[in-house]
Length: 114
Image 1 (cartoon, rainbow, N blue to C red):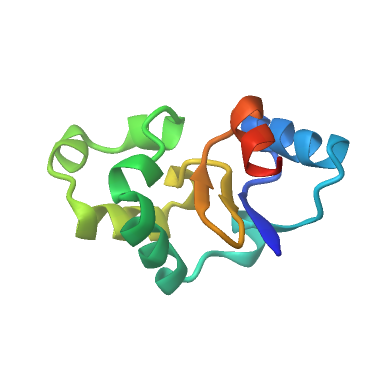
Image 2 (cartoon, rainbow, N blue to C red):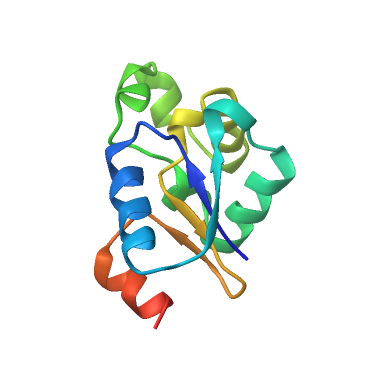
């Protein structure tokens, strides 16, 4: 089963969900804001793709962090920051039977579901 993780109001999430719907892909949506995110799930993703890819450095939540926090970040701190501020998790996180995919690009989704 395919699961897409993110925040419902995120523009990138809306694009990804629209793409999935238009292409008839069955999926389950996991809303971070409503359902939270388990630490073990996040750690699994970090092992698979790396914390550097998972941290959303483009959002306002990241920019609001003190510079000392942003500069001194490592895997342990990144995991804790993402758990404390779920908006710091780059979206969407698409989990298929075969892999985990971070972000949305229509051409990549087309390859995944070919």
